[in-house]
Length: 529
Image: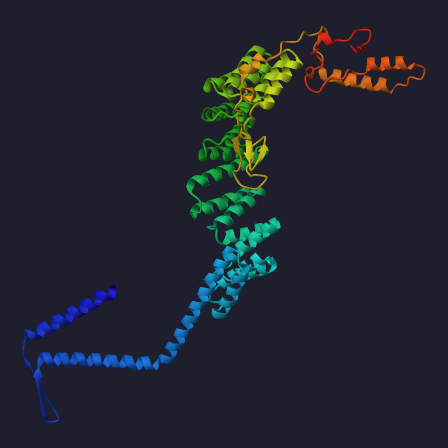
């Protein structure tokens, strides 16, 4: 486009010049060796321009003839280079498709047509061909050669890093990743791997510094960088909590500013403030976090803020949280547990049943079983609630890569991924279509067995009864009968041995629940109590 404009301007300039000469007619006279040459000015200008053009053409022809050997050599060299790049492209495509034979063939052809020092992709093609063929030692040697070239150093380090990960050499992989991250912190794979390695080793300061470099280089966006920084600060605050509560408080509060809905940061900040006897400020942090997202860990930390509080004080704290988030499962369960600690069984049962109505899950039925055991001691009713808990959906927990933890961790113990734990149910609960397998608190209350009559000496420990009966049976069976006739011996063994029961359709698996119709006579049954 620029050349076309220049050509047009040149033509316009020549046309303007000739028109200017035509408007000013005149003759041009030249005396040379006594001869007078006379012509018009326009003709003389045209002849001068033609002469200049002819000289330029002659110079171009002479220059072309003079440089023709070099031009021919350059033509063939360019043609050879084009064939080499075509072979290199075909080889890379073959390596990507897994065709090791074609990749190796094209690599050899490329090396013969192109100098390896001019095109570093030849080494990459040879390394990929070696990896496809399973010659990992040769591939690692190629990657090491690539690290010596500044142009391919990052590519070689990545290849060595992947090979070290494949062999399980975590220390070597860490060194390659850190070397790549130090030279080029903008590499996502190197920065992410180095960040995880430093976090796994507890080098939180180095991890935070690398994260700032990534943020400055715009490798990750601001929201993700703030989230990861909050995770790292919370992890460092957790380590400082025992020996440096002030430092833990600063890190945790900074993490809360970066991620306001991050429950572990709120819990660590509150615990640090508790150690500094700043109960009001710690309670304020937990209350704000509870209003945002009711979490059982936040509730337990808030209720047990002071170790010297009585059960009644803990109940008041739980009811205060319930007032902030009414009709919430976590609020109801928290109040029910606190009421159970105060022996207020009516309130505990009411709150637990309300929680089960909102969300029938494992924790609600387990709490009902605890209430039943503490209030009535009826093992049949306790087992009824335990059976409901087994069939109910599991409670949310900290889950990362299939690993379930009872507390939050900054890294996944399975993959080492940072910020991998999520508060959710460990397994997805799929409700059955038939009514018999659907969990319902109303159905559970209808099928709840009646309270068993408690003996004067108190409720019987069914597990203890079973152990005593089993020990007595074994002792009686091992006692010899040398002088007892065979019929008497059989009668004694029948009195001692328990009656066989069918596998299906038998009595409930509870020694405290007896069938009066099947109760043996007192004369023939061995009574332990």
